[in-house]
Image 1: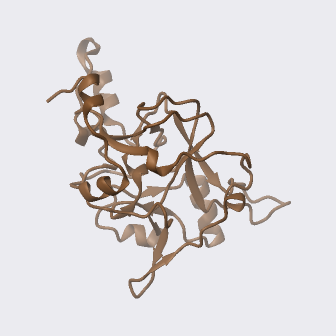
Image 2: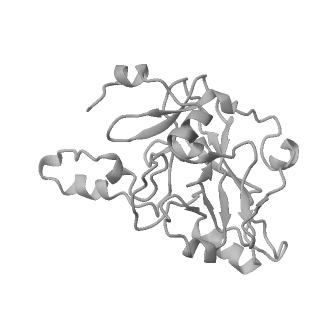
Length: 250
């Protein structure tokens, strides 16, 4: 059933606890990411104080209160999305990318890779060379509201920020600087209720674009949730399959 904008605005949004219950995952936004130890226990990454966590970023940066974010049904062509109940100012930090931390070997052992998010190849190569295990973050069963944020290649209103900022190894700094965390930050002012989006990166497959280009007369192809989000069905309790995962792209 197609919904117009007024219909979508009338639908209630889901706050963190309700979204996690409805979509069958555990919200760990207040705890951060974790590793799974050999005995199956969780090893939580030590939380950073705000001033250390945001080193290299504007020290006066503001955070969007997590309670102001809500998942909502964005229509049949986009599935579920994320919005904020208050205005977001330019450069405000919206949410952290949280989930289960994975090495490359652990990622390869996953039966379902549709949710796992990887780093761009240049950062991934630098991490492998330095022996840094953190290669992927998987929010499928443990994550946060960020998993509802849809892709927008053309006009995303959020951008990804690494902490610390990536620096390639050099003569001056042979080890370089490797990111440990990733956050989504407002790229400009965003009015309340507007869907939040970010660019999944060039490696994310967008098969509908090829289909649209090949259609005679330029008629737009109607793409359902399964087609548009083939590589990462962030919000679905019944995820689809994909050919690859999106990347944490610069």
